[in-house]
Image (cartoon, rainbow, N blue to C red; front, top):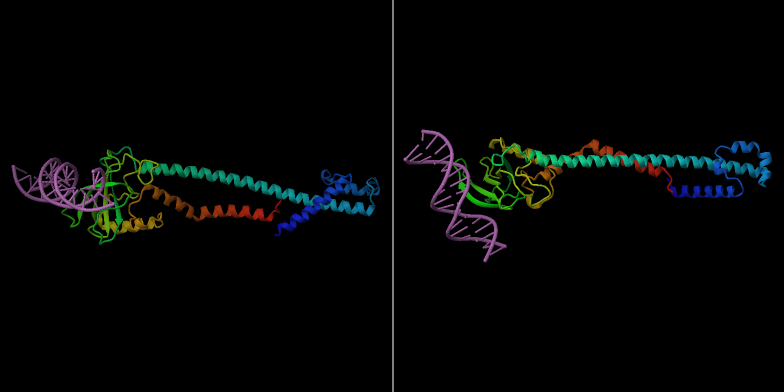
Length: 290
DNA sequence: CGGATTTGACCTGCGC
DNA sequence: GCGCAGGTCAAATCCG
């Protein structure tokens, strides 16, 4: 629709309407009185000093202007309703955002920091996909670690490395890293305890010692299946080139991010959003701009 | 030079 | 008590 032409047409009509009013008849308050006045055309046209034909033409024009005004008012009301509706939707989205933040807090505080368990007994396992030729036992999980020992164990030809968290002097968290017997390209990291400080990489909340998936009960033979799960679940991580192969261990922020991402990938969620948006835009394009 | 890593020695728990 | 395996310590070494 060419809104410019509509605007021009409307302007002309409004000008005409104003000219008509300036002649002594304020028809803006007439509202349907045109017909009655038409019946009195025999005498009224004399009062305003115009011919009967001119009066009839003006009355007709006035009727058209009234109809136009009603259409415009209807459009205005519809637009106003839509605006109120959209405002409500935005308000509802803010509620959803608020609940989402609470959910994130829940994930962080309840899943990763269960207060009923002692820090010492809390252990978790994380898996890191690395180059099989890479002999280092260093994994990047967002924390600072100091290696304090290395041992060759009986059940695994690959040595086991021992690390302590070095970000905070009093942090009790330790981790052991060893190459998987089944898959040499897989590093198995066992974490013990909880960090008593914020994550060096993110920092807003106390960071958990545990990975998103805590497969402490997973046997080595299930590593591949677990890795597949991890790969599927975190198929779209935050782009960090150096960490692209280290999918097994992710701070909870990534997990929450993935959950939020899943929500927004939900067709119902996006369809509702798209419907609301397109509805508003269509409504706006249908209504003459003014 | 200071922090991180390496590595052999030492400690501890457990089974026999 | 002894041996074994896992875990830790700490001096030596490395590295930025």
